[in-house]
Length: 116
Length: 116
View 1 (cartoon, chains in turn brown, cyan):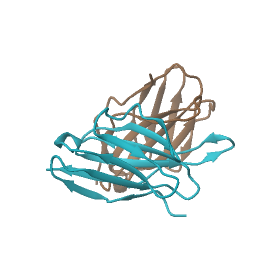
View 2: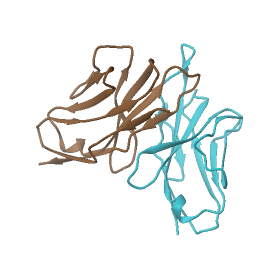
View 3: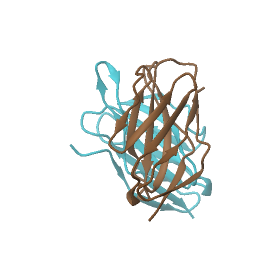
C-alpha cells in the first residue's frame, strides 16, 4: 500500500523569505501523480501544484516549485517570496496512475505560519 | 461552471441521530469520492462511486456508514446513529474522464459534522 509522510508538523517563515516543506512517499508503482494541496482556515482544499512521475522536469507554478526525486521518493515544496496568504496547512498527496480509478492518499500535513 | 458543491456546510447532530451529507459534482463529472478529515489529521479516503455504482468502499467503516450516487441527484453520504467520534470534516471530490482516463479530482468545500 502507498503511504505519504510529512515529517514537519509545523513550519514558520518570515514574510518574503523562502521555505521548503518536505514530503516522502512509499510506492512500488512506477506511474503516479504527486500533489501539494493547501488548506487555509476556510478548510477548502486548494491544489497548489502537480507532478507527473514520468516527467523529470520539476513542476513550477509562480512562487511554488517542487523538487521531485523519484529514486529517493521525495517530493518537497518550495515557496519563494512567502506572503501572509500562504499561511495554511499543506498536504502532500499521491495518486496512482496505474489503476482504473485512483483515490488520493494524503500525508498528515504541515502547518505553515508566515511571520510579518 | 460551478465547482463541487456540498451541503450543508455545517451540521450538528446529537448522538444516535442520522447525518446526511450531500455532494453535487461538477457538471460533466460522473465520478465522486468521499474523504474524511479528523481533527489535526489529513484527509482519508472513504468511498469512490460512479453513477449508481459503488466502485471502492475500502475506506468506509463497516457499520453505520453508507453512500450512494443515484442516476439523478447528488451523492449522499449517510451516517446512522452518529457518535462523537464521527465529528469531522467530510470532503467530496469529483473527477472527469479525459483521454480515456480519470483526471484530476476537484474538491468541494466540505461539510463539518459536529456530534454533541
